[in-house]
Length: 245
Image (cartoon, rainbow, N blue to C red; front, side, top):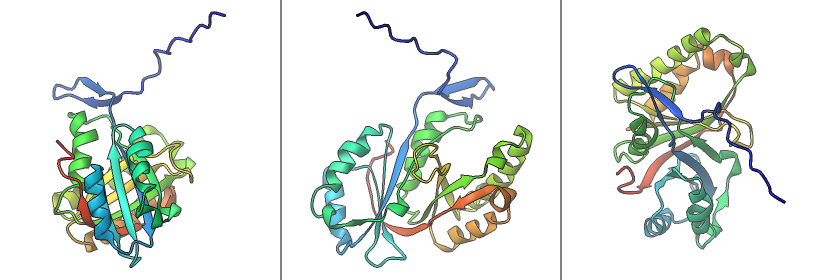
């Protein structure tokens, strides 16, 4: 039997879009995936550092501020298969098998463009890697969020206004060198049906808490979020080298 394959629908566009310096539309079919896993029963974190280095894993290891035996592992790749091969293979070998996974903190997301970026490769690939591997940004808070369906029913202009209020706070903290963010989309990638994964990174812990407090007063958080957290709070003990090259 001659099986005919359906031709791809040319009307479906999955490219990330931005705007060039001349205002013309630009696009890129690349994005970075990031996965966060948290574990308990980590009695010797320095030992895991050695093994991560030896395995050539691209990522960051954190000590969990709220668990004296807790760690968090962030890994990233443009190819999601790497989480099933390189990362999973390492975590299924001793001493990682002695760790206790905390599934409530598991997060997986992808970078995305919002349409105005003039350098998509920088925005989608290089900048997120540079931020999570910056040796001066040692404190982090990672958490998932979910918007309510009511937000999606708003007009594009009203959504834009709400997001500009939210984004303006983030930009102000970044301009002051107090906090930087990583924004990942996780539609269909999260068991709890969250929409986004957020990472806040800074030189100190207090500004990260302060920015969450400030965001509470925005329309998006106060009116249009149905889920926020759980929050993982940690400090870097290892970062992969040369990941942003």
